[in-house]
Length: 315
Image 1 (cartoon, rainbow, N blue to C red):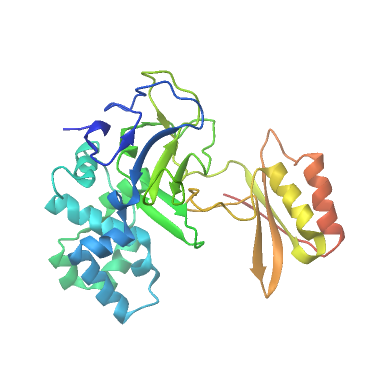
Image 2 (image 1 turned 180 degrees about the vertical axis):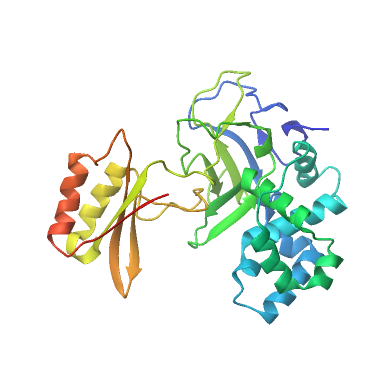
């Protein structure tokens, strides 16, 4: 039986149990907040789920370079699969999310990842955790639907499965693209005593309106990606900053912002063969087959001062 948002003990919410606004909300105002400590994260799995932590840490000791063993998603999915089988405390946020999930959630196709994980852990460990392809693919599907990825203050990415997200109205097919600041991991705000996930209203809502949810995690910008690169030292910081303003990007995302699994920042500085390059990604569509004249002018500055490498591919 679905319990709704009102059953989250640690939730600070302007939303009722059916995902509707309990008060009028202006665009940009906080909709709800929940401490990161109440979400599924790699850190929480390591701290609270001994069966998962022991298995993964022992495997990492054997192969410390394994990407699948180190990935946040692996720790979260194994913890989630463990919780589904063993049930967390009944009044916990994790138990509430499990009860709110739609019946018959189908697993996503991830056989190659499962086989790689089974090879690292071994069949005996897999059996001890009752981890099967069905339980693993189910957990991956839940994480893919409701998981979030944040930029931490240290520059690393933090992945989390956030209880409460499952109660909102999904609008993944909406024409309005999600923004990195729609959901943030707030760590320095005086309103919160610990790192807290905060969902902000993307638009204004009246009381009783359903709150819409568009996942930044799965967002893929439309069109053909045309990538332009030129040396940072040749064009200078001002050209890059102006490109950021025009294309809506930033050379580095703000700490706390959420991002996509396959992030595609419009403007960023990359290190290639020991040289700093400005990497500009243009999205060309049938409606807009060329960038605006201001963008073209700025690109001309960078291209005119150096040899420029072009690559073009569709995503």
